[in-house]
Length: 234
Length: 234
Image (cartoon, rainbow over all chains, first blue to last red; front, side):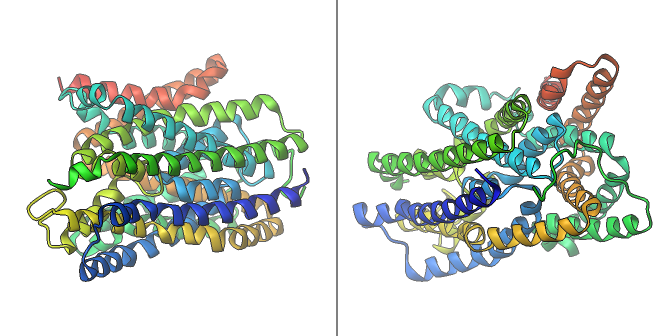
């Protein structure tokens, strides 16, 4: 399959499948109405929907713009309907790229990230399904007072290791993102900056891009060493 | 909690299974399409397999956190909704926030608290469903255009393109890695131990050239940090 046919197929199927799924999710609340006659009050629904949308439109846009450059199109279509982006899919894709040493800018990188997101999505579905089937025994394990604190620290444990591998691979590139992340985290933890908490990702991404561009223009940054055998043009 | 008998009814399980089957079908189809393109590009099969294995392994532990979410949400929202919501667009944090907004705008004190009647429950479900629409709509309308414009820009200056993508990845990782460093307590211990273990693995990898280590280093660092937390809290 040539590049053009592949991309055409991905976008065509991607758009249709996301549209079908989006409409499909309405079946859940709709079943409550059609089968059981339960509908929220109009006023409550409109207030609730506008409250969540006012936040989510901006948050989703920011995430979309930040993640799309590092994930292949096929991966984006999967990720936007399967969710759990920052905590599972992005790290899975980055880890796969790191382990194979494939350059994310090339078409190979696009392919690896798309495959990783797909596999990650399926893995999550299977794990959650097993959780549903084995809810009672899992409840005992997860709510065990000795184990609970560990499960609460999955995200820090994941990203602590991940940031180290980034620093080792290209410390010059990592200095500014880490410094900026410290500043943004500090500001958003203060009362006057609390509203920023939802938008830390785009703020850190944009700020680091600006600073790293300046550093690049000054000749201070070198690209990540990876195999660049396949160019994006191909 | 009169809503729970309805929330756990068979028909809702059926709808959830249908939705999640579609979700898995979408992932599988896009994976197959991408593998065909990888074959046409004559990509290294060993690397492809490795990347998928790493993505799967890296997704397992963070997916376990979803089961913890399931255990928390199921007593309030019923198992089918909790399962569906946590296995699709959104994340545990999002679902809790959206469900709470739905509950409060319907006059309940909070999720599962005083006044959480059938209408409040239905409102939670509607708000959770609608809140992720922007995410999916951006995927439908903007993925093709945005990805193409990124590609166009990156062909102009390939060196900067590498730094651009590397910077975004590092910024996203820093966004999640830095807050637990500042937070203190178990968060800081988890992020610290996992970082230290990762450094040890990187050194071992460099000195001893154990290739499988790179693949599992991330997951092993996570598990080490989580084990340490358990031991320290005993």
